[in-house]
Figure 1 (cartoon, rainbow, N blue to C red):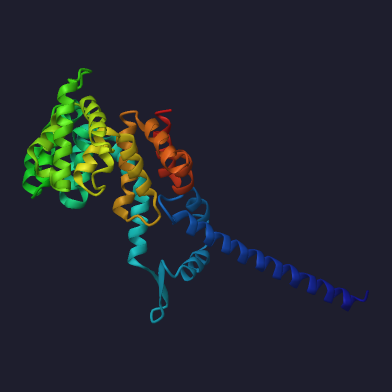
Figure 2 (cartoon, rainbow, N blue to C red; figure 1 turned 180 degrees about the horizontal axis):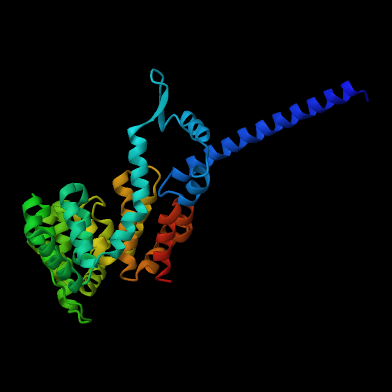
Length: 342
């Protein structure tokens, strides 16, 4: 081979190597883009991926990411830069805050946590009244509810009952005030004749009034004063007397249904709440339910029952669903809370 031929060969070889390296760099950039996008999509944030991918990236990589991410950034052609969409900033703030909010809620005294949840529900209005049902005597013990009411006094300088009565109007007020005011008997004795009598009252009220049964004083009395064990017996008598399931006879969107489900089958109630929060089309308010359920129920050691019910209802282990749909520290924290009950 002549000197010129040898030189040409090495030049061509060098060009080929340069092209190869250029393609490799472009591929690396593509992988960076995919990694960043994946790390911030969905619920939670993959902090580890962001540290390794975005933290180690060159400014040209980040520019490439901005230009390629049209849903996150918009090109300001006049001023020659890519600016963040407001919704992208809000999205990131929300997803980064999920882990923080979960830790803060978990760190709080359960009484304070419940008091703040009720206050937040009152600010949101009708759409969040089911949260008051949940926090009230439906899923907490009598002492837990009394403690939440004490915390409400301390935090907001008024009673929980007073605040609910002043914010809630119409037929829902009486039931909600009754539920949070209750101090239920938690013993193991039930008068069967009384349970059967109340079952008939409930059956007649639902048959004649449907969802408006919430306005009946006797219905409010039964739901807000009777023990949970008593209501389990009432449920059995109702189904026998009526020939149908009490829970299927009430509209799922009604407050009475929420109360009955919490009182009679709390693991079903929470499984449905978790499933709704994990739906990809859920709004940001609904997605927050996931933190609430895990934090409040892990404290009472009934996440195992909820996980079993979830598996039965939706055919997939709850831990697996969390592993697949949640990211980063938020995912790890939820799985830790879930494992407490195993």
